[in-house]
Length: 161
Image 1 (cartoon, rainbow, N blue to C red):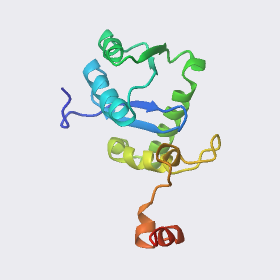
Image 2: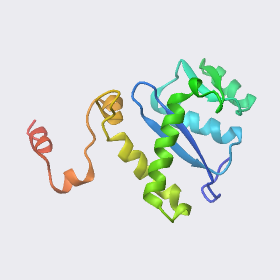
Image 3: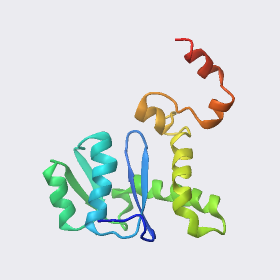
């Protein structure tokens, strides 16, 4: 099984098509056990069993069996066929763009910056929905750290209930 001490050189990205919620995690390998753990922890345990998951073709048979055990249909896509995985390609570009912007010359620290980049993305309104991915996933806006230090009107009014 994966250990925290291994060097993370890759990233797995999942996106919910409706909420535009991106979940990304640094990986040290693309072995099926790592992918299976990611799907279990970040998709099934958080959102329940999806009806359909679009994956790239490079995943092994272990993942297909794993998904079938939970009655999740697997639609295969390829990195070359952009029409089949356009949402994923767009989210990958967003995450990589903002990681590069934050890191500049310190590329080795991308694993530490990934949660900050995802937080910023999840709390930014999307043009396509007019809402933040956080709001669409949880039904409320996130309370960001500066609002705790300097409470906003919405925090003050909400605390009167």
